[in-house]
Length: 65
Length: 134
Image (tube, rainbow over all chains, first blue to last red; front, top):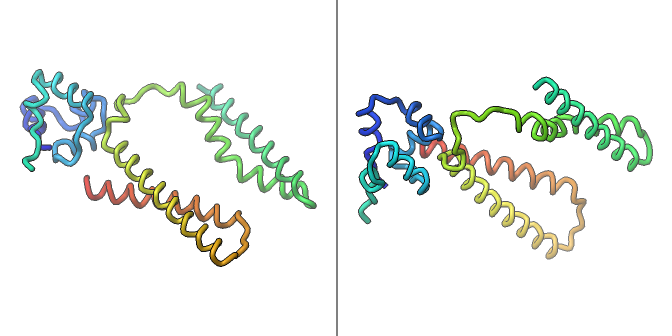
């Protein structure tokens, strides 16, 4: 699943560590999320959407298959 | 917190002494040697139990408040699941081989080997996943 988490984070001037802290997960999780190598659980996706004040589908896009 | 650490140490010593006495009483001779060796070897895991019972509940929550939603947790789950299936396969094949050959062996060493295989399997799988996804 692709996402624009890195762009949204950069727009706020946050480090990966800061975003991880805001979401209550590890920094490695944020790294893997941004690289599209880790699909978040639904609760985590909701927290990400709430944090950036948008909908889940605004952040995450399913891979075309 | 000091009291909690003390409680963990006391728990460890009590458990290890119990294991030592039990091991000593099962042997035919050299009671104190058996009891001492088993007690000494049991101290680390026994302290782990004491730590879990008394120290862990008092540790303040860290920045990672949703551990089950981290990528590390997913790696751990995948590693443990894979290792579990590997152990089932190895135990099944070994059991089949013993049945076919009618070989009688003591269970102690194969069981210890199986535990070590499980540890190594999880460690290797976790490392591979971490390197592949990091």
